[in-house]
Image 1 (cartoon, rainbow, N blue to C red):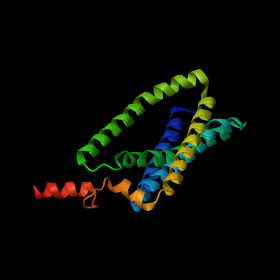
Image 2 (image 1 turned 45 degrees about the vertical axis):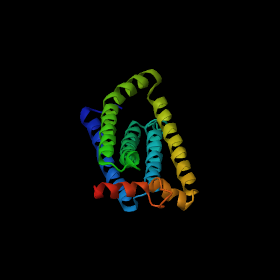
Image 3 (image 1 turned 90 degrees about the vertical axis):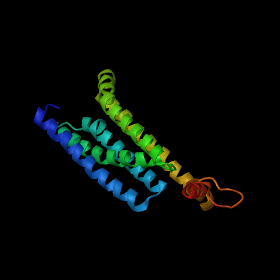
Image 4 (image 1 turned 180 degrees about the horizontal axis):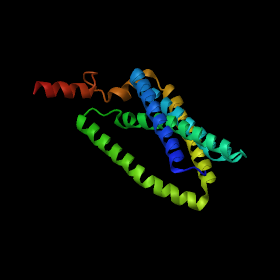
Amino acid sequence: MGLDAAGIGYILSANALAYMGGAIVSGCIIDRYETTAARQLVMVGGWAIVAVSYSMLGPLATLLHSHSAQVSLIAVGMFVQGIGSGGIIVPSLPNAQAGLVSEGEKAIVCSTWNSCYSGGAAIGPIIAAACTHTFGFVVMCVFFSAWGAVSVIALASTVCVASTIPAEAAELQTVGPVERSTGKPAIGRQRSHSRDR
């Protein structure tokens, strides 16, 4: 891009600040509605924003003939990408912990999630640099933009399918197995037995 180290640092800082804002907004929405559908819809929005950001970073930037215009569009694209990343990453942990009752199981999922996140942050740039060197920056941006579009379609379809499930079946999936003899959730009875002991 022809930028010095300070200019690149400003763009990366804008991405980080946008992620912080997107993460806060996503977390507030998830806490407000506390449903799987809300988390999925937030992720749909996040992937859509990321798909748009990659199209701004690669294909759209190449259409501009002015260098300053290209740099400006890339900077805006990085900022937009940060917002979308917040919408993708924040709901992923609650989704992974959905349906778990034991705090120990939740802790295992949380630690595994953090390990995968850190591992991706360490390995991802190396793989991305190698792929960019082989295929080119614009091609990789097109690939990730298409990946984001496919993710939007996949997540949106799961939300649509889930909305067609009868309320009784959805409640059964949320509560867990029901004992035939009493009609009460088995999880609830397990808790009561543990308290009696």
